[in-house]
Image 1 (tube, one colour):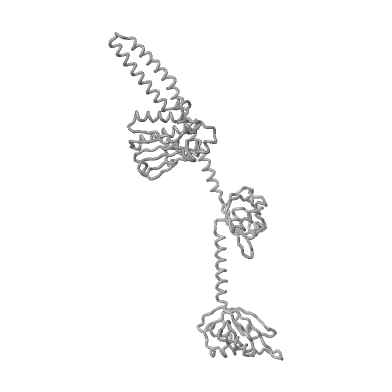
Image 2: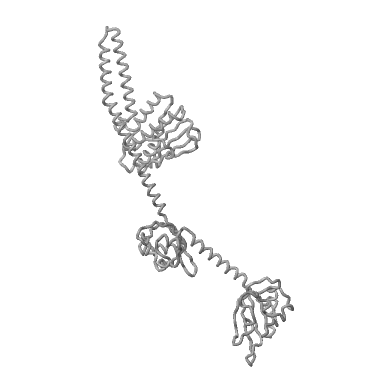
Length: 478
């Protein structure tokens, strides 16, 4: 029974099996080995085992297969030859049988095709070489650390960046280089990377000479048996310096805007106040005297008519002076409130320009402090000036709305609008538009400046309602 079972296993085994005489001749071979070598059964019987081995594999010869004195089992990896002389890798597990006189009788060998495994190993080796080449040529630093933060591997780029030799770095810990984080913070960072699988963050490393280098880190946890963290480390010195320069530039621009607006506001206030209080009062006094003179001259003929003409001209001059003063600085803003001054602005525009400007207030109460009221007035004033100069509009409107969570103020017209569908104010270089943007920022308001679907332009200011209600209100009742 056992011999039958043995024969069945021999014939049906999924691996190649052969029996070889002490002279190296094949005496038995199973179907699987015939299939692997592409030979018929009878073609292999009596064939030398060396004939199916690659001659140039470095170990070919009788010595490697026949002289087994003292061996019982051995393992080999060899290139075998198929019938068409193509080669493939096999692993050979051999067992040597001896006679009672300790003479080799035969060798039983098991052959396992290793082509797939060999190909995979070769591919891995090729990828390893390629990866090492990338690491050595990349401009970014690279390192591998264990879960304690000990540096296990690094490339030349990081060595050059940080000033330490590779040998020095391999004896160091992350905390020896980290300039921002404490040891506990570094440990916490490692745990976070392990948990999430990867992380990107900014930090600073300390150069061997002592200066600090900003570093962008892209780290990945390798959850294999080695459990390591691989990281690319990029020098961000140039980027950080650029950001600093941009921040300085932005600060300078903001200060310049603020200075221009402050100087302009101060100048306009002074001129407007002078026109209103000084020249306006002089003209008003002259007008009163002219009226008195005109009223007292009943029989003066031409002189009487001249007095009346002077009175009319002086009264007109007073109106013009007050109008100019009001345009330069809204003197009545503090006493009369924003809506009254906007209404006065609307009346002045309708009287002096070929455009119909309407004011609509859809709110019971509006809350803006004095500074905000002045900013809003100036924005509307600048927007209306732009409409008159550029829009070719015949109609325009100002609408105050109080919504559930915000105030909105809209200035719109029926003119030609902008060249594109939408534009941001900050993209325009005009001082007036920059002033509008600055004033909106000072109030914490969102500003939209775009074309309307129906034609014309819309300027919308939006103020968060909660912000204004929490502050001391400067009530402007409708």
